[in-house]
Image 1 (cartoon, helix red, strand yellow):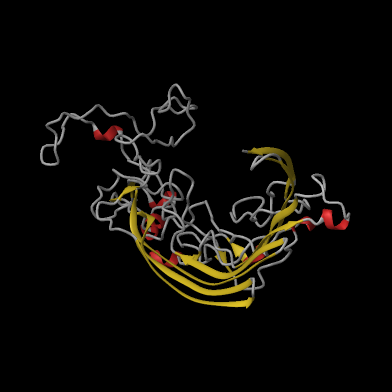
Image 2 (tube, rainbow, N blue to C red; image 1 turned 180 degrees about the horizontal axis):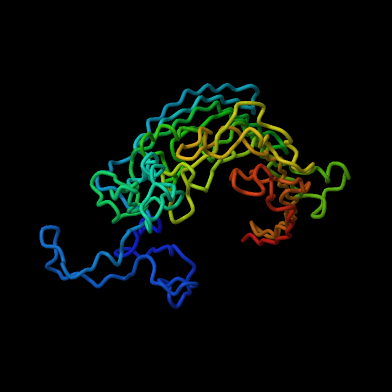
Length: 414
């Protein structure tokens, strides 16, 4: 079974405690000793149980409100892609070929996470103050939208009241639904050359990938999934890669061909590219939609004021990578207006190279000795800056990928 489709208690094997707990007593509040949340596993239902003849021996109150990981929607259809390509190829020299392609596609019915029991912010805000509810009633607020709430006039209301779901019986629940879409357009070019001692393949891509969700676990806005349309989290606007191999002419330079001077090869891969997009999130539920998943995915995004968003793009100098003053927390009861992603983080400048010596023996037997270096020049490959507005490191690049790594290898061919 897919790890992201295991469901929640009482039928599934995933449960998130709403309070601190001990491993030995996962349903007991560590500080108050009160029994909290859902209890599972539920006893196996009899084989005679069915939707028309349900098992009446289950006390559902023990499991309510039901909060669950996303589960697969019964009405899903098969996702598909429509793709197209136009290619131009020309031989520039006897051993050099240039290829230029336009490559595009659109994705239909992509899998996304669709919340189905989101809160109605207006209802939640109407019972968000102590003087708006009866004495002893809970008040509605961030992460507390399930209810019930009793107004000061005695009327009982639920902020979560989506059709088909019993009010108060469900918390945050969602579907894996095939309702997403995507688009990709690119200019792809390559130059291939091979002559004598040198072999070379260079490629350059200029592209843009957009989608409503870059993975099945990405949440969409329940009342308007199109609001999530933004750069894909794997989008790389420009990407230049060159691979090469050169047989070193030591035997010609030293005018002394021998087993020592012959068989030396220098090879490598060099890449220059723009970075992955910065993903903006806000995890305080100020929107009062009550949408989140057990794996930490959130729907909320901050507000954004248009302006010059890049501030200090060299993380070595410290500070924030982008202008954080352009972003602000959501207004209570309103989803932020920032795009999930709309610009990229630090790019890549990387050289991987290897020096190899081939020592032939009889027939086709040979010993190959190699010295390999990854990130040869130890150039810092910075990670994406923090896009969580609630974080103390918002806008800051807090890490980098691996530094230079070298290794020695020997391989015998026979």
